[in-house]
Length: 282
Image 1 (spheres, rainbow, N blue to C red):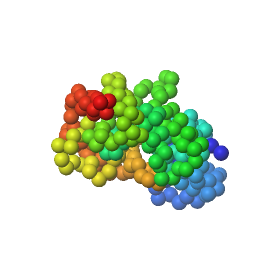
Image 2: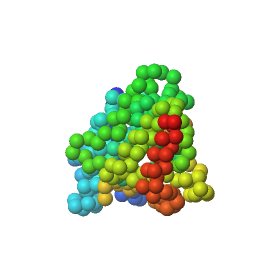
Image 3: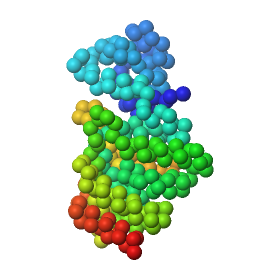
C-alpha cells in the first residue's frame, strides 16, 4: 500500500484545525453534510481531502479565494504518489516523512559531526554507513536503502537544483568509514561537490573550540516562499525527529550561522579536504 506524503497532510490538518477555531467539529461537519469522523480524520492527517471538499471547507471558514493556493498545494501533495514509493518497505515512517521534506526543500543547511551527509556520499561509503545501522540485518533491505540514497542525490528533470549549505566537523575528514581507500575516494567526491553551483561546503576545524552545534547534528530545510515554514530534522538511531515551532527553528538557524562563521572559508575547506585525501594515498 502506498503511504501518503504525511508531512503535507499534517501541516494542512493543523492549518484547518486552526481555521476552525472555536467552532465545534460537529457543527462544521453538519454544515457540510459530513460525518464528524471525516473532519477529524482530515485534521489529524489520517486521510487526504479532495480539492472540492477543501474549497467547501475554506468557504465555510471565510478564507478568500486568492488565499487558497497554499492550502490546495498541501492537499495535492498529501494525495500524491511520490517517486520513492517503491522503497518505502525498507525505511521507517519518520524517514519517509524526511524524504517528503527533502524533496520539497529549495535550501538545506546541514551540520554534520560524524559522517559525510547522505546527499554527498559515494555508493561505497553509503553502503559502509548503512551496513553498520543498528536496525538492519537483511541484505535486501541494505541494497534498497543504498539505491534510495543514490536516487536522492539526483535532481528530477525540470526541478531546480537544491541549494546546499553544509558544514562538516574536521573529524569527518579523519574518520575512515569503510577503510582508507573508501574514505579517500569519498574525500575526492567532496572536493568535486564543493565546486558545484549551489553547494557551499565548509569545514569546522578543531581549533574552533566550543560552538553552538556541540550537542547534535541537524539540518534546516527551507521551502519555496509562501509554501510552508522551515523544518528542522535531527537524525537518531531509531528514526528522525522534527522541530517545527518558529522559536525552535530560530535557535537552529542561529546555531548554523554560528557554525558557518567559525568554519574555514570554502577555498580553505577544499584545501583541508584535499590534504586529508592525499594523506590517505601515501
